[in-house]
Structure formats: C-alpha cells, structure tokens
Length: 328
Picture 1 (cartoon, helix red, strand yellow):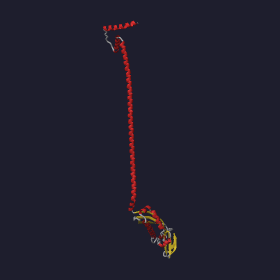
Picture 2 (picture 1 turned 180 degrees about the vertical axis):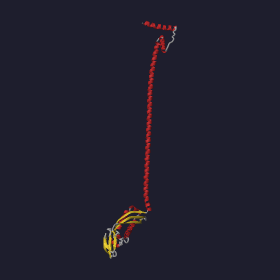
Picture 3 (picture 1 turned 135 degrees about the vertical axis):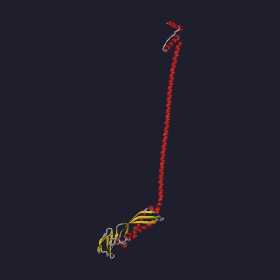
C-alpha cells in the first residue's frame, strides 16, 4: 500500500517495489512504474496502485459426476498481473489520495473471475466422467486440464492477468458415497485379515498337532525302549537263573560225585576190612573188639575174668602159637 504525506495543497506519495503506480492527470497517464516516489496535487490527480506480487486464491467446487454423484474439488490457484496498465483500465485500482488505501475491491473481482472460469472447467471435467473414474485417477488429470483451461482463457488475457500455478489438494465424494465406495475395499481387507487370522490359527493348530505328534512319538519311543529294557532285563535274569542253575547243577554233580567217591571208598575200605576180619581167628577178633571197646571207654573200674573165658582164650592162643612154631 502506498504511503501519502499531505503538505497543504500538495502531497508526496511513496510506493513499494511490489506495486505498480499509474498517475493520471486530465485522463492521461503522467507517470507509470514500480516503487515510484513523486509529488502531486490531489485536486488534479488520479492514482491507481496495481499489486505485482504473486497471489493465491482458494478453489472450492462442488459438482455432479456423469453418474449423478456429488464430488467436491479443493485446491488453490496462483496468479499475478502481467500488464498493469491494461488491468487498470478494466478494473478500478484507484486509491484514496489522503490515506493511500484502495477505494474498491479489485482483488476480489479478479479472483471472482478466476473462480468462475476455474469452476466451469472443473464442472465440465467432473460431469464428463463417472465418480469411480474420477476417484481412481486422482486430482492430477483434473489439475492438468484446469491449468490448460486457465492458461488459455481469453477472459484473463484481456485484463492482463496470468495463472502461474494450479494445485488441487483433494477430490472426494460425499461422506455417504465415500463409505459406500470404501465398503468393498473394507470388506476385501477384512477378508484378507480374516484369512490371515484363519491361516495363523491353522498354523498354530498345525504346530500344536506337530508338537502332540512329536510328544506321542517320544512317548512311544520311550515305551519301546522301556519294553526293550524290560525284555533285556528279563533275558538277563533268565541268563543269570540259567547260569545259577547250571552252576548249582555242576556243584550238585560235583558234590554227588564226591559223595559217591567217598562213600565208594568207605564201602570198599569196609569190604576190605570185613574181608580181613573174615580171615582172622576168633581170638584176634576178640582182642580187636576189646581194644576197640577200651578205646571208647573213658575209665574201667572193674574187669571180671571168668575161668571159662580165660580157658577159652588160652586155648585159642595155644592153637595159634603151634602152627607158628612148626613153621620155624
């Protein structure tokens, strides 16, 4: 905004470099340029201040697609003045010569023209396509088409305004349609989630089954090994019993053989002794019996020798002594 200092009948104007000033006098251009500083007489001058910086306006268009669905388009349009003198002749940019403020709303008028052109182009693009194609394509095709239309619009060129950028931030249906369009995708995602859950559960069940089978195989293997161990222990016990029985049999056989040999020797010795006793005379047998008896008696208190016994003993002694003397 220009700064004006009034000094009586004259005034001084100082403008910024981003503004183009045009001073008229008697309907003719006296001065024109950016960042001017000059003195003027307020009663004879008319001054227009045209902003030369880039401006942005908000774009909001609600339209209906080819399949009669409401679609909302949001974005921004950047524009700037390319010919300030032409623009000043078409739109009033005059300022108050006391305060330097604009007397009208020229920027709003320019943006209203831009909004009308852009809105019409957007509505044509939306109405020519079904809502599904618009949403699937996204805002870029619509942005390119809108930029082309605005760049070639004669209604902007004839007032000295050019569009420098077009940005579309959103293209969306109504909330009800959006929910309806989201339902198939949501259902598909839910089905995928359910499938993943079922797969995870099936995998868990499969792992549990594998673990149970592994545990069963382990128990079966342990039972088999235990059976083999029991069978082996039983076989070892049978082997030990057989060995023990065999050893006992051998021991019994040896004992029987020993007893047989001892008893046989005793029997043979007894037979030999009986044979010897058989050849002895009664007197010798009597003496041997007496000696045997005397060996078993601990004390002899009385011995009774009868005459018959003594006579018989002497007779036997005499009969045994005679053959021995005759032989000598």
